[in-house]
Length: 578
Image (cartoon, rainbow, N blue to C red; front, side, top):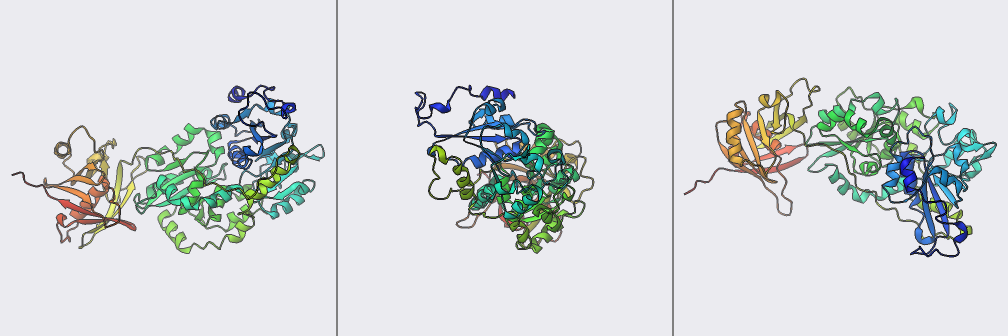
């Protein structure tokens, strides 16, 4: 018994089934008519079963409990996740000692036969696709549909087997025909919630930094040696250092089994260099669905999250296919064979842009439709089947279909702002400066593409001395901007431009030779005033300084352009004090 589950377990006599007709004096609300148990085995299945259990309404007289079916190699973090939800959590021993009207699980294991309740199982991803011989004992049956998992002593353990598409029932009939009569195509409640969240795309994108013209690339990796992270562990770092930082935001979604196997600290440490360069990592409990909605590109593998992204019509490219561990007859295998590829060793920027130009949402639609059916009615069908088990207790199916709530906004794990960039760009005769900044990472960056621009927080032993631009990004600093600039100009003779932030939209700028200007962003009528990034501003001014063909003075203003986004910046010289 886990320590957390033990602490949260209710005493076995806390609520007696025989006492249902006589409400306890401890109850504030009406005593429940039926008790339903949610069964988790891994963090992946736990998040899915909690989601599905929301289809059961307490106001219909349903009391919900949860337990952990022990024995999985990927159970780490499961107890803390459940305990943090404020729900009834029972130990496995207690859950098997008391009866329930229904048990719902998004994974299946033969030991679930010990439960005194009809068992309904559902997939914890986009269907049943992966070959896991350790669970199935079968090199041909995908996990969740094997005889070893579904049968015990000649009898089918679950009384209901939810699948996302009729084709999976046909596959089940081939693998375990005894179980096929218990199967029902219920669609995919998880994907229904994703589609219901599309109107929240702007809010999700804001949380992930996809603002001011930035487009969002999300890296998705399932678990195992065949996954994207298993095959190309350097790809997140390569993406975040190869893509211009002002044009792209990069986030990563890793399967909960990656976190369970390698620990939270291990995952974040392994991706530390990429995080220093701006990579955001989505926690395993929640946020990946919002990332699917928010994304422009997905770089993934054969995992369900990549499949969902393609189903949501996102530009999806695979860096790993996982065909070695997929049921070759599954839609996931067809997806892995047919989705566009990304070469991790090639020019990733060019590949992303080319994939966007070639993107045809209809290309993978037959594969998607072969895995996900009844997308708009999944919640209704799933709830109706669960309520059938509760009818004898007087629980009736609520009128109308359940309304899928938008998924929560993402809360990415991120580090401090990038402190050093390699900058390239150009300046035209009309005062427009094109800028491309790529983050610098120690040990990864070997050759400069342009010039270096750093902030005062950068502590690399050589980059500040090699930089042409130095920026102080904190406005509320101890030393006044003018004093800091004067001191920094004496200490760093190599600098062409120094910039000190004054507030969100204004900066103080000093050029080589001592000329000082105040810069501020301008705005069109009806538009918000854009923030002014001191490093971006300093980089633009340095590009203007090094362009011998410039025909305008800075006081004429500059237009800073990064990709499709631009902002107009005005410069004001000091006003003499009379």
